[in-house]
Length: 427
Ligand SMILES: Cc1cc2nc3c(=O)[nH]c(=O)nc-3n(C[C@H](O)[C@H](O)[C@H](O)COP(=O)(O)OP(=O)(O)OC[C@H]3O[C@@H](n4cnc5c(N)ncnc54)[C@H](O)[C@@H]3O)c2cc1C
Image (cartoon, rainbow, N blue to C red):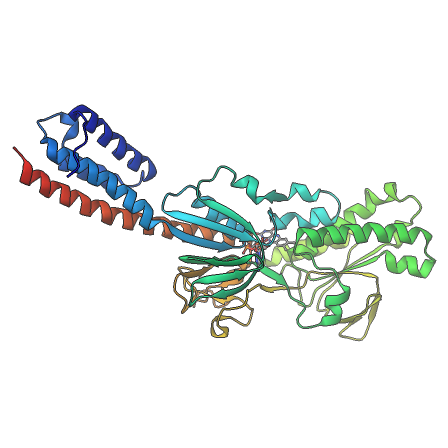
């Protein structure tokens, strides 16, 4: 055995430092402290066999180093939305996990305020948070800005436009994309609002339409000032309300050449009510409020076609408009590689209630892209930021528990070995 030239006091100090370091990193291990003091009563400064003390110190440090080397698991998170970002933040600086957070954008986007960017009330920078800035002091989170193109669960790796990444654990948090229900014409001519970039596109198009309306003839001006929003969920309600307020407040001041009495805002909804996922009272109130603001709310109204100038409705009637915003639905955004048997009709990845992707080892899915079917919630949970965050917290807690279990197992083994040696070598 290698006996260093250290005094007993120095060794005691070193042991205490080592233990303190471990305790700082794993404050939740309250049991650990008790076991250590039972094993070697170093604080009482009793006559300790020097050999046992040195061995104890060596093995403790060796154990900690070995543990750090072998237990650092690589978690790859795809998507820095509400779910992915929360998970990376919760595991930030955890000594047992190396995290690679991948997103196609170098920023997190706060989707609930897209409508404010689209309506020129907020700048894009107010709702976009650079990922490298968020994690600039992190010891274990690495950011990669790239698009994931394929997931290979057998080889435990993912393909991206910047190469292949291997993982011990994979978390898919890629959110949702606009659902056009297979209608390519609507996809081509209408404007979605599922990213900051798309919100800016709406804003720029809207402002360009107002400029064009100034010089257009009466018929074209009417088309340019007629805005159709399809989808009476929260996004459609927020957008039409914000537009209606602008129509009376700011627009007449900024475009005095235009007659905003001729501006029409339509909100089309396929079901019998607005905000169908909310309480009846909220639906009624939202409709009344929008109508009071001058929005034409059309319920039970389905869009059949749109060619860029005319919106053809299912009942055969037509609305003339050069500006249609499509907020009528989303579907899960799944990278290639997940077996079709585990993808739902809503294009979401089926998981169990621990967020494990069914039949894939060490792969999890969270947020809008994930579906947990249960008797209580046969259609899963709503695609909301709060749900994504809660799921993320749940998974993060399980990763923390897993680390604690591993660590506790190792230290338990260590204390037993040290105790044995202490008994054997006691003077
Ligand atoms: C206009 C609008 C308003 C909303 N308002 C509200 C609201 O008021 N309250 C509420 O609770 N919820 C609201 N939501 C819903 C909420 O934003 C979502 O439920 C939430 O964003 C889901 O979080 P997520 O982490 O699952 O996905 P997201 O937040 O969508 O994040 C997914 C991330 O994955 C990245 N990504 C996707 N594919 C890839 C790929 N292949 N490679 C790399 N990166 C990829 C994306 O860039 C994105 O950053 C709103 C949504 C919209 C569109």
